[in-house]
Amino acid sequence: MERNIKLVLAYDGTDFHGWQSQAGVRTVQAEVEAVLRRVLRHPLHVQGASRTDAGVHARGQVASVLTTSPIPVENLLRAVGHHLPPDVALVHVAEAEPEFHPSLDALGKLYRYRIFNAVRRPVEVLAGRFAWHVWYPLDLDRMRAAAARLVGTHDFAAFASQGSPRASTVRTVRRIGIRRRVDEVLIDVEGDGFLYNQVRNMVGTLYEVGRGRWPPERIGEILASRSRNQAGLTAPPHGLCLQWVRYGPAGPARTNAGRFSMAPLDEDRI
Image 1 (cartoon, rainbow, N blue to C red):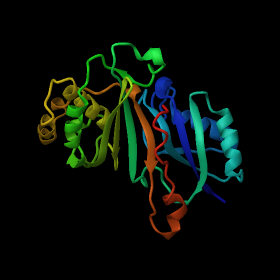
Image 2 (image 1 turned 90 degrees about the vertical axis):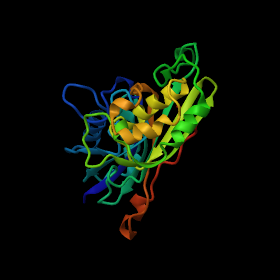
Image 3 (image 1 turned 45 degrees about the vertical axis):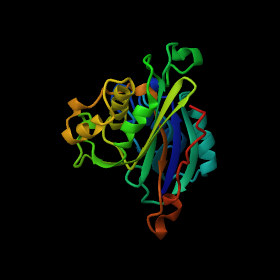
C-alpha cells in the first residue's frame, strides 16, 4: 500500500545550491532523496513546499514523499535523521493524506530576514553565515512605515526577479514585522506565496528607506511602476530563512494532512 509521508526539515543553506535538484551541484532535495532511497529501498521523488535559493536557510521546510515501505514514521525519523549530512536535520515526520502536496496545499509561509546592523562584524557573535552585515544605522520607524505600504494584496511585479515566470504577479502579504534584537534587525514577512526573490527584493528596498536614501512613500510609486529597476537591491541570500509553512483543512478527507502546520518557533533561535 502506498503511503504519503510528510517531512519537516531544517537546513543551513550556506553550502547548498538551493533546494531543487540540479546536475553537478549540491542541493538539499538531492541529499534528502539520497538518504530516503537508502532507507526506503526504492526509487522516489521528494516534493518541497518552497524552492529556496542558493544560500537560503530553512527551519520549517515541508516536504513529502510517496513510499510503499511499511517502516513506521517514528523509525523513519530516527533512520533518515541519522544518515542526513550535518547541515540538514529532519525535525518531524507524519502520515499525510494521499493527495497532500506541500506546495499546492500551502496557505501561507513566513520568511525571516536577519540584518546584523552594527560596525562590528557578525562573526563576533557567530552570525556571519546567517545575517547580512549592514554598517549604516537603520531607522526602523521609517522601515516600518514603508513596510506598511507593502502589506495587502498588490501586483508585486516590481519586486520579482527574472527567472521564474508566473501567470500572475499579484500576491498577498499578510504582515511584515520589523524589530531590533541587540545588534540585529529582524524582518518577518508572512504571505500566501511569493515571487522569485520577492522577499529579498523587498528587504533591499526597506534597507534603502532605513538608511535614509528613499522616503517611505516611494513604495507606492515602486508598486505602481511594475518595474524591477525601480525597487531596491536584492538582499544577500544568507540572511533569509524559511521559518514555517502553514496548512489548513480542505475537506473532511484532508483533515489530518490539512490541519498540520509548523507553528512559529522560538524567536531567539536561528
